[in-house]
Length: 310
Image (cartoon, rainbow, N blue to C red; front, side):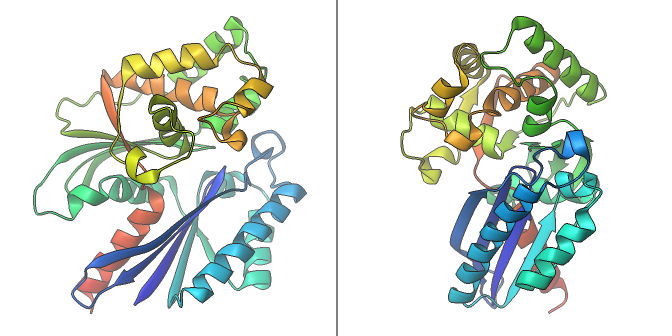
């Protein structure tokens, strides 16, 4: 059986295609990344903008072609923060369903946290060993911090601050003034103040574009190579050093940065600052980057449910 899982985030739309063997083994066939930024302006205006509709349509059109050529049996598509917040989300969902016959389910913060955790921990959950795992997912509209043991989530916190949202609210000048940075830090701290400190962590994992971009910068990677990024260990000191370097650059310099995707140039500072403050709060000296995430969590959940109900 072939399945495609689609993660519709505030900034990106990601699709994973996998073959599921009769014995439950998962073989990854393709992993596709697009920046559609459907959440652009949602924080300010409360609705998905017309240009975002167009970008999303073009991405979904491409994903549908890929799924059909890959002979996918089932497509599972989930929407997260931007679709939870947008007043016109039903218009968007009906548009995608009518035009492309793809049904999108908008998931709750709790569901997002669970699936993000399962994705971040994907490598470790394939074994019979039980790990204490902390997963951090810095999205465009929200950030999830999840702690679990094996497949079981022990605690999670979802906060409505992400790289796109923080950029649009505060960090929208390049380079930012110190007052903007301090204001952004205060806002992040206010959002994450209730995150409980966790004493037992075997692995701290970070997923999504901020983490993978920081790994690419740390590795001085001009051509993005997922296999090298996945599993890369970022230290707090290196993340701080990267932030101190990037905060001095203009928008044009960020767009031309050899290790940063041009469409992430305007939001990488905000995402990095969120990560720094989370690591401060949880006393993390390192975090391991995962190129997996929600789409892998959807896949894992589907396979485990399938195995329970053959």
